[in-house]
Length: 248
Image 1 (cartoon, helix red, strand yellow):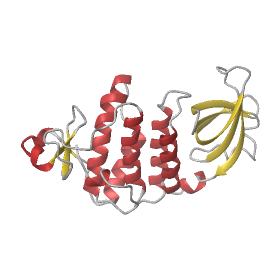
Image 2 (tube, rainbow, N blue to C red; image 1 turned 60 degrees about the vertical axis):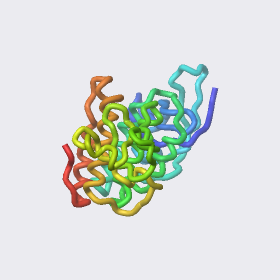
Image 3 (cartoon, rainbow, N blue to C red; image 1 turned 45 degrees about the horizontal axis):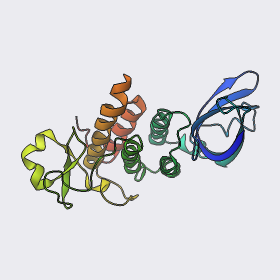
Image 4 (cartoon, helix red, strand yellow; image 1 turned 90 degrees about the vertical axis):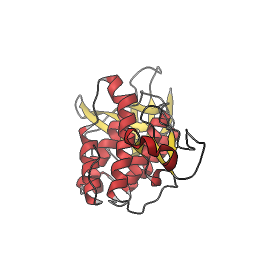
């Protein structure tokens, strides 16, 4: 059996003499592991760094075997990302999210979003907003998508400003005002098209509070986990650099 696919390197570990087990997020075959012969060599070790994009060919005799990877570099961005503290914590956060996906479960839209985000992860203006959007997409891909199309109370589609922490449904500013203390703020940038324009710190704090609440509710807490430390560092740094404070 064999297939070829584009992939994002998530992690690698030494195996035997000179080999490495590569964990990668592929576009059409999901999160996948495979043995890379010579993965610790001078040629391949720099390629198998987290964040790099690679072209993989996987081969195995049986589908449920570990199998082997042949690897070719596609976009070597790891060295660039290592030069930024924000990018490093963002990369670690993204990898933690992807490593939580079921193995071999394809998510092509999530892959495309992650690949695009990694190209901009060292851009302090664009990366925080794109990562917040990625987390909202991750929830949808896992079956826990938020309903931000209209107000759950009035049916209005304009001036949506709140989200119910219980149902994940939006509420308009006026309809939700009596219950504002019980609702999560909905930053407007999550409702419009993606942009690389800088975002205000309070909007970023609200976005990560929103996605973090539902990730904890549906993903982390049911698995006995907490939010990744890398995410906490990224959010704190991104919000502070954007002139805001974290929302508790």
